[in-house]
Amino acid sequence: MNDFASDPRFAGIEPFRDKLWLSSPTMHGEEQHWVDEAIRTNWVSTVGENINEIEKQIAAYVGVKHAVALSAGTAALHLATKLAGEKLYGQARPNAGTLAGRKVFCSDMTFDASINPVAYEDGEAVFIDTERGTWNMDPAALEKAFEIYPEVRLVVIAHLYGTPGRMEELKAVCGRHGALIVEDAAESLGAKYLLGGRWVETGALGDYNCISFNGNKIITGSAGGMFLSDSSEDADKVRKWSTQSREAAPWYQHEEIGYNYRMSNIVAGVVRGQIPHLEEHIAGKRAVYERYRAGLADLPVKMNPWDEEKSVPNFWLSCLIVDEEAMCPQVRGESDALYLHEAGKSCPTEILEALAAFNAEGRPIWKPMHMQPIYRTNAFVTAEGNGRGRTNAYIAGGGIDVGADIFRRGLCLPSDNKMTPEQQDRVIDIIHRCFGSKVGI
Ligand SMILES: Cc1ncc(COP(=O)(O)O)c(C=O)c1O
Figure 1: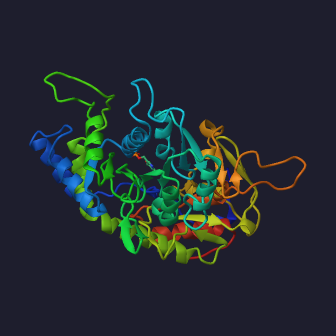
Figure 2 (figure 1 turned 180 degrees about the horizontal axis):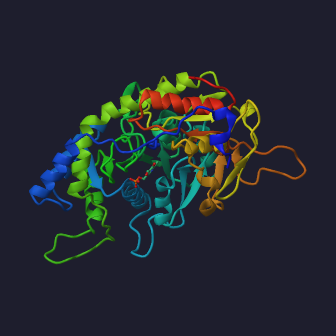
Figure 3 (figure 1 turned 90 degrees about the vertical axis):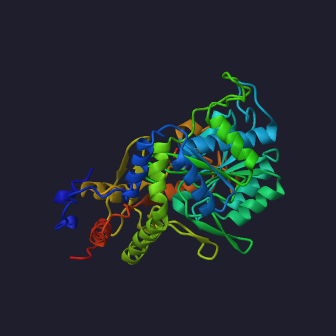
């Protein structure tokens, strides 16, 4: 690691006294009130007014008929995926998943919690490459995947960093092939998409929809998530599965496998205190994004893009991607990375190390799923077709791999909405100095 403190490029930069976070919880005070209320009234378990209220409020905000509060976004995704599997292929035996022997098309550039439920249900994820306009699933690659695997009936789609994917095209491809969609809106609560002339919230765009209240999300419950649906039957089923699948009998009676996935009324109290601040959090994140966009405009980098006609992101994380010509050499192993500084150039590893040296937290772009050791033997489909085995010792070049390219050249910037403009200007200054130029002093 470079010694940034003694590197003349960074002369005069002070480390942040308090760490600048990627995205930390922002509390307002009402959270304490609703948590206290739960304790005062002794409704501290998985039943209570906070749960009822947030289910109502989030369903109304997102524009769905039903919301089921769960212990995590991952739990919501698991039950959504299981519900889809059961709808498509029937109830599984107790020792098997609903997707046993089935392939499922999945977003490739996402957090693994989006797609691990396919494996929990014994299915096999097939990863679909990313398009450059939103950094989400490429509809052309999805179409190719249906050519290769016409039997597939389920697609898991995530909206990365709060930016909606190209849902109109993705839904059209799924519709043509009779496939259901599990929508992972964990990162994108509050983001909207223009569908058929109508603005629709993410979390209302799939057949089975999920959000997260993880500590780093746009609003948090300290933990928690929700399943969202217009179907009362599906919502009732998720509620039942999440509370150990009890039947209507005087004793513990079970016809289905159950889970302990329900949200606690204490966690729901934190969410209840956060909901009134959702719009304010989004406005704060947007201001952070815009400040980076203006402050980095003179560098050979671009910000994470979105479809400006058809979507409004929630700007959860601000990211940048270094132009190819401005990339210094960088290699990444399984758990470490090296780079070689070159004048006028930089790379994610250098920028992240420089930020860390001055006490600011950035993060590499989420490493695509098809590159993860656990999923390296799963199929990967790009806009050109099969994305595996494209190189040849005797022929120059290889296939396209958009996800790998964004991972190589991109990074997530400190995006905390408690960061002051002055602090953010210092981050912008540090990034300039990585490329060998100074601003601000
Ligand atoms: C895209 C995505 N999906 C799913 C999850 C899982 O949510 P949770 O942490 O609430 O289980 C996360 C984040 O944690 C996420 O970023």
